[in-house]
Amino acid sequence: MESTAISRDLKVQVTNKQILSIALPITLAILIPQINMLTNSIFLGELSTEALGNAGITGVFYLIFAVAGNGLNNALQTVFARYAGSDDPAAFKVILAQGIRICLQFAVAGILITWFVAPLILEPIADPKAYPEEISFLKIRIWGLPSCSCSRWAMLSWLRLSTAVI
Image 1 (cartoon, rainbow, N blue to C red):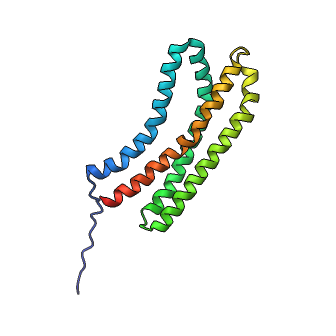
Image 2 (spheres, rainbow, N blue to C red):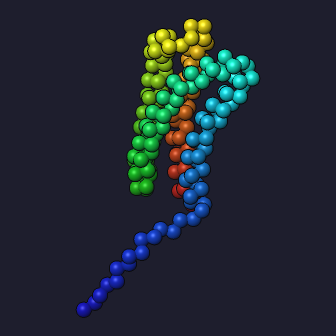
Image 3 (cartoon, rainbow, N blue to C red):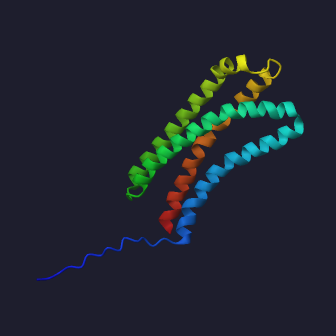
């Protein structure tokens, strides 16, 4: 009787180059919005303490959309990883297009909420003197939401293309 040896070695050989090719694009996608907020704080702090305070209040409102977008991106990345690993370029392109479309729809919804609902929320709680500046700054700042939402998808598409070469 012939016995077949079953290999129980399930270790995967991973190189530092493979880890960095995955980690660097994701790190950059997370780092870019943080650098933007740090730069805003530096310039507004030099302008005046009132401007910095207004940016802080509007930053908390913007943070709600950023965290919700981060959760959406994590969910979409899970679906994306499933199809990216299947070596099916057609499915990869469809999922990528759908992910970008969903992110843009989320961003448009965030912009509309900010333009039409945020004034109703912030008016009763904001300082009447600072309210016009806060709403004006928030309406400008929210236009960055589409690029914040889609920056990870751009990084992930680059990641998919770069890892295909490794």
